[in-house]
Every structure is written in C-alpha cells, then in structure tokens.
Image 1 (cartoon, chains in turn brown, purple):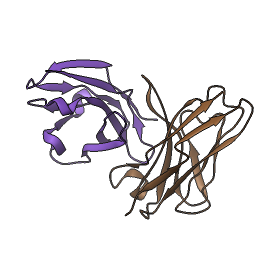
Image 2 (tube, one colour; image 1 turned 60 degrees about the vertical axis):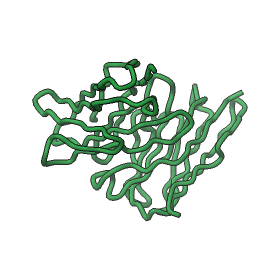
Image 3 (cartoon, chains in turn brown, green; image 1 turned 30 degrees about the vertical axis):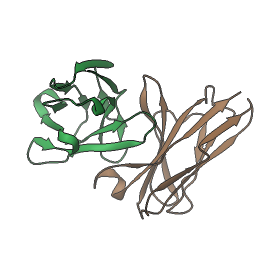
Length: 114
Length: 110
C-alpha cells in the first residue's frame, strides 16, 4: 500500500542532542513537507521541498535542518539550537508542489526533550 | 506568505444541530483552499478542497464549504452534526507552501 512512513513514533532526547526524524513516501510525490503541531497553534510549516536537492524554509525553520537527496525521503534534524523542541512532528507529501491537490500525512513523530 | 485565521478555538454544538466553522485566509492570488479533520489519535484527513469553479464545494461525511472571495473566507458547514464529528478541524491555504490555521475543536453534546 502507498503511503508515508514516519519513524520513530516516539522519541526522547536529552538537551543538547541532535535527533533526526525519518520520513519516507512511496506515492511518487514530488513535494514533501514538515510541520510542527503544538496545542492551540495548529500546524506550522518548518521546511518544504518541491523537487529533489531543493528545499525552502517555512515559518519556523530556526533550529531545524533537512535534506532531500532522494525523491522518497525527507529527513528532519532537530538540532540543539532549537529552543523548545518538544512537539508533535508531521511529515506530508503532495503531487506537483501542492497545486494538484491534497497533502497526504504520516502518522507523526512525538519528540520529548528530557 | 499566505496565512489562515480560524477565529473559533472551540465550538460546542448539540447532536443534530447545524454547524459552521469559520476560516479567513490571506493570499495574493487565487487560493487553493482545504479543510482537514483530525480525530483523537488519528492522522489528518482531507474533507474537501477548492481550486476553482463552483464556489460551493461538497466533501466527505456530509460537509460542504463556500468560497467567498469578497470576504476572503472559506467556511465549513454541515446541516446536522453527528457525535462522530467531534474532532479538530483545520483550514489550509495553498498552493505549494501550504499554511494551516490554528484549528477549531468541535465538541458534540448528546
């Protein structure tokens, strides 16, 4: 079945550590996105990529980094520079950069900083 | 960048009553507009979308939304709410770098 796989589902990190969240899709979608979800704030865009080897910052990119070396993969690294990293992270993909339709979401990764 | 405002953080309606969730957007060109629903412990599901054409769009689960360019709005409606509609609802505007509103949490009273 086609879809988006995020891993791990739950992750605990000590302060000062970098962590990488995985996002893989087999939908053959061109565009991929990372959002952060906090209670009462909806989904806020961290980074997005419309084609391989290219990505753009969203509204809250500080303290995060991404890569897009393969069409299927868009990993997100939460660096130690992110001041408040505890959150629920959602990865999504779409055809043609979103213009063609809906975003398809993964099940999310919940990061807790101890 | 485009933005979305959902003025109502939390709405409570009785089962069987009608529902309207508000969404206002800011976008310089013709927007692509979406409504998503997130049930507890579940992922986001697309309810409906508007790209062009008829300004009244029908979605799944009996929902509809009306695009009003003059008011920069895309309000979601349902004529009769069911208990299973209790969830969080998000409005989004695109294309490309999709932006979401803060969400409206819907509680359904028996």
